[in-house]
Length: 420
Ligand code: AMP
Ligand code: GLY
Image (tube, rainbow, N blue to C red; front, side, top):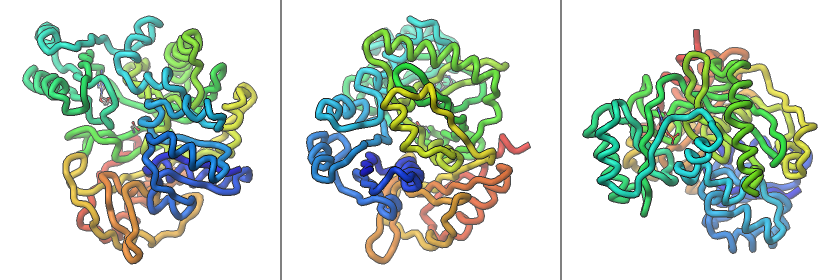
């Protein structure tokens, strides 16, 4: 089969890595891809939301299956668009994609279906938002009601900080016309849980734990994710059973009832405390960097899983995972998630043996013919698996230690909490 992967991050590089192992695949294409992906796929520079051009590309290359990595084209309706033109595509439709695209939609759906999540209120007016805020206790969480690449959320310890976050959203710092969602702060430990749904049934993928803050010991601003490991020990079989029953199943039922059965990967961001999980957020895709750690552990043929999902036969699918622990550490450009330099040279990136245990997935990289250059915020996602997490992390940090890239930054404490 000819496969097209949409996206340009380390998540899509990891997807291409597993896709390239599938016996069902003859060639892989990527829009727009990156330097790492170009080692496995033919990359084409098309805007991820230019659906007409993507469709023309699919026709010209006789693409048989499109796999979408990031949320932006999904929320913009790429699945509805290509499906109508009879191109096979994996992911939820535009309606179901609101689970991630609109925090208000997601919170309303939870409320209507008694899904455990933080209490909230939604405002399109600054004065009402501030009045509500003044009646709440601290800490409190302020969110922009739309896609903001993980940056539209503020966990505020003071009223001043919360007010500033509300002002930023109404000043359109994260995009035009966004409402404000004010949420109860949930204490606990976070985990990411993934399921693959065919509209009727779902299969559980494994759990992972992401490190969202830029600084060590989970300090500083939120990022897209600075590292991850899988499995997440906090996500016990008992929690899984509760999440499947109280969160995933009612969500899928509600979407089906509304005429938009969910097909694709559903990612539940969870807050776990005292043996009970509540939903923080839904994403409509694999996580980045969680995808990297899952792809190294998945034993199944990913394309077979996706085809089963599209055919609606997941009830017969059994997923298998390596017992190993996997981890990934993101190497970012210094300054990220704020401003950072572009086109800085990374030396030594090719010094590793690429195998089932160790992979360097690229995000913001390009090659000028001589050198590998960093051209994004998150740049490399160095990923390993081993019998125990500590050994996997040792492999990763040994590789990063030999990189010659003075403009790079990474957290040295990824996975620390899970190592007893
Ligand atoms: P979101 O984009 O909604 O996932 O939020 C990003 C991050 O903000 C989450 O991963 C949490 O770390 C934090 N967060 C969001 N909502 C809450 C909440 N209600 N209580 C505590 N932390 C939260
Ligand atoms: N790792 C968080 C995300 O993909 O949204």
